[in-house]
Length: 572
Image (cartoon, rainbow, N blue to C red; front, side, top):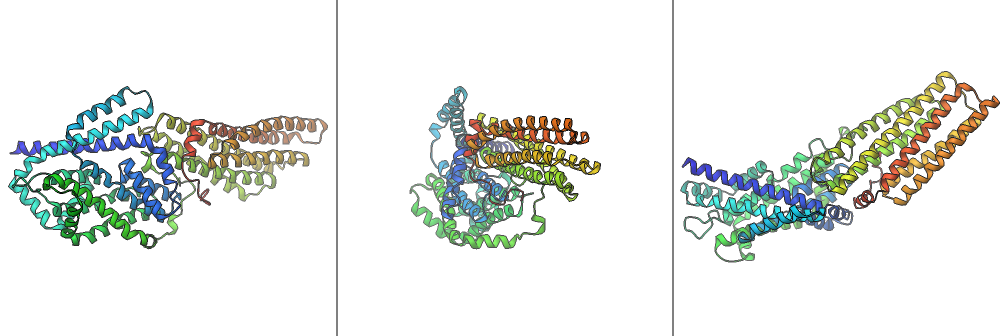
């Protein structure tokens, strides 16, 4: 008996493991093949709440993971790229999209499983093109998913003959609240509602003692299904750990949606089961109950979306009141605003957010430009603390951005082109950090100039100011080109750098002429020439970022990266 139990339990857990692995592998392949399109779909969310629902449903149906969509949305909200009502509408859609998995499982394709696995393996193993490899991986994983289902189904058959087990299931079927708790606990443990619903579909498809009816029945399956929907919200909750309150509100709205739905439907389980049976295919219960469960899952989420959609603003206000903004919600300058570790497995979205973080860092360097120059010309003491704070922010954010980008390479989700994009973005982050260092150098010369009492001639000040204004324009254009993905503007920056190099040589020559004429003090030479070199170096770093932006793969990736940084996001 113990051996039989261990064999059954081992087969169930093994089949579940293969199912989850296949589902994750399929999601990975789909993301690689369709990730950029998913960004474009999420980019239309500013239209209206109905479009948001449709986009969320489509993205989740393609990625085969409501958790992936929800975590991605939470990342967008925490970064300020998406409003709370927009995010809630997407989550509504994600709940609908995830029901597609249950619909797929309901198909009887046992005879075709191994041919599907073989075809997928051949395409993946022998293809040279990355696109075809992704397609092969998706087909192979789809087959594995059903291998897991078949394994679970085969080991569940002996359970139907166990009177003890039948009596236990009878208790769950007769007490809906107990079914909800079982479903929620299963999903909390497995961390995948799709997996637990697949187990539910397979288990319900086992015949009872009479050999005709389901061991569980639809009225017993529906409460467990409602519990699965509650349990899946834990993924969203876990994704908000360490995130701003806007992200926590998004996760809370997801919880309220599923919990309110379970509370509403638990009172009408018998009538709901009859309705589902009426709209579903008819036949022997063990043959059709898998489809009935899939339909119950889909209709539940569609119904709750239709119920909540008109009250979406109210739901947004409700979660805002439950999680109010406090002083602690203000994000420190040195804390990344756009990087979200939870969406590393959606590389297109992660790259998109990283670009916004780089634009934010670039915004800090623009602030440093004005402060450093004011300090050099006017010798303002209060500017010293500001430049130090900004430099620390740029250094820390560059370090965290580089680490974040590097972590994307370890996920295994990056395409070959995306790997090149990540490498270029790491280089751009380093360039911005070096730009900040040059402004600190200018600030240090400002301190030296004030301490030594150096005074520049009117000509020297005009020359330095002329160079600075050109550099400031270059820096502004660099950040703008990165923000807007403007290839032409990036090309113009390279031409600007050529002008800067000629200007630096010309001004150095003029300064030497003034020294020979005695109109300029030798003591000023170090400060003058080094500041001039600092400005030229900033131009070189801007030019390097511009060259990065001219990379075809990178510019195509960024152009498909969705919305730009919201107004006021930079330096927020």
